[in-house]
Image (tube, rainbow, N blue to C red):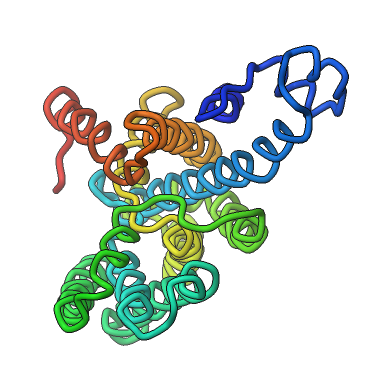
Length: 326
């Protein structure tokens, strides 16, 4: 909440925290006393900043929760939401549109989010089908399939960019991550995916705890391992694909936020998952605030800010906590 209040007030037009509160409470006479036209302040707050901040909060929550779920499922501290090819598939779907012959306005408003979402989901479906061995889906095989299918999707994406250089800048800007849409519509579209994924992951928190003992022990403790793996992959992929569709390829959120929260609240996924959602929302809202104010009026892609802040923290985790990838 503190990060949201801070981000709402800071921008090209500074709105003090008390004025934000007055606007939210609809006490316009006090807003006029602060020297700000109520109409202007209301438009800035409710039509420009709040939709952006809400979308960034939902994106950060989705990526962080999906990252925590993947780390628990694969029992690998380096797992992130893009591990099974979501990013590569979403990038390919978006690039197909961005390098096409559609006008820039229709691209920004309509085409890119559904194309990125479908690309991410289809890629993960292909990865899961390729990783199936009989009636089981070994985690190691799924990781290898994700790497292979992701590399293929990335190669096709690069080919399309080189084939149609007129769309290269648009595709590159989208892949760096950021807020490219407007209004409340993206928030309304993304919210159901976040709710479905978050509820599914929370109900699967006990299974994630048991997974840390190994698949055989989980099976002996009454967990239907194969069904639970598919359920976790589906929920995490749904949240990641929705986040990527509207926010672009924003890295490090799903990697470092679960680690940071694990140090604060412990490894119990019943607490780690909701805390990761809150932490991911706060982290990305603050990164977005830096991205739009650091070099104002020029805006830095938020993916650049998350990488610049996430890399030192990740190196700290590797060096100080002695994280093993095995």
